[in-house]
Length: 163
Ligand code: FES
Ligand code: FES
Image 1 (cartoon, rainbow, N blue to C red):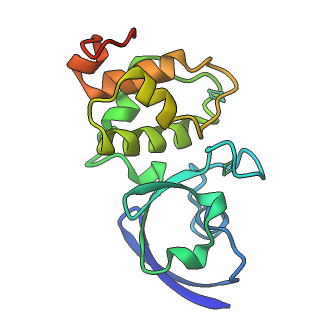
Image 2 (cartoon, rainbow, N blue to C red):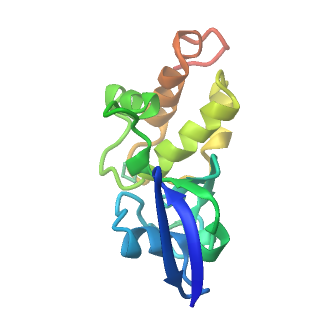
């Protein structure tokens, strides 16, 4: 067992974990953070995406011990002061989900994308989300939601996009 100490959704936690334990398993099974989901076993779907020190990672592709000393934000820690994060609000507004299974990871990835590039083109959004798979929506409303979250100049197509 290895001792880890980290911050998860603003709370300090420490635990003894198996060195092989995946971060996603730690979040779900040790901390009850079941908002972060597992959609594959090949690190390809992105459903497990969280922020590790502010950058999105697939938490099934990171060991819990690698998060020692870090700050992790899950979909459950994204809202601030009881209000939805702008990307969450935009997904709700634009009907950017159907079954919702991909949604936590999609929102975490989109939030990171917008933090890096606050005014992305449609192409940049599609490329930024290419590691996150959705079986239901055809992606159109997801892209529209990210454009909506980015603000009026992006949402209304002044960057040449089509949403
Ligand atoms: S569960 Fe992590 S990428 Fe699919
Ligand atoms: S909404 Fe069902 S997988 Fe994306």
